[in-house]
Amino acid sequence: MKRVIAAFAAGLAVAGYLWLTGADTRTAGILPYQDPQAVAAGQRIYQDHCASCHGADLRGEPDWQTRDSEGHMPAPPQDASGHTWHHPDAKLLEITRHGMERLVGNGYRSRMQGYAGVLSEQEMLEALAFIKSRWPADIIARHNQINSQEAE
Image 1 (cartoon, one colour):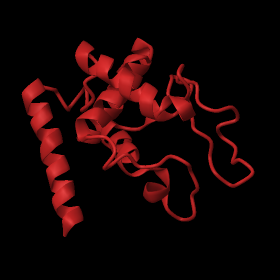
Image 2: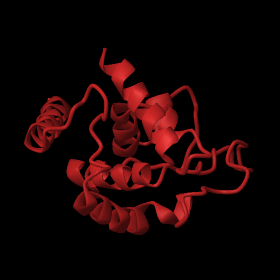
Image 3: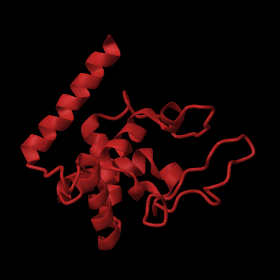
Image 4: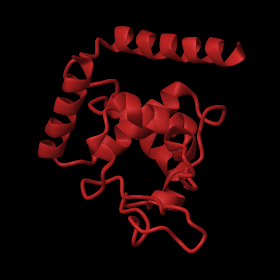
């Protein structure tokens, strides 16, 4: 029951954020990547919680598509060379919230921990906004299209 309440509260928080910012979820999704304050906050959050694995330059770990000796998938790049932008905002938020192992299941191994209970929903959105703000305009446009298709 606590999980249901927490999920509902998280949904309300995101909905409230979208309403307050006037975000157009049909095209831009839920990440405040065009808000300089959110991006600046996200940069600090990224440096504190993400850069140690995904790199300060968002390039990820070397050979990120091959399991390491312990069977874990290395941290992928968060820049345009990776696959982060292939996922809609809601999926990125879920990955950040719960980690990859929990979402993928079936024995998938990743060191990507979930940040629920560590970061607030707003902080997760800001970190993701920072990442998105660093993508080239054409990748942002493609990602917005992915969000638009997801909303349909």
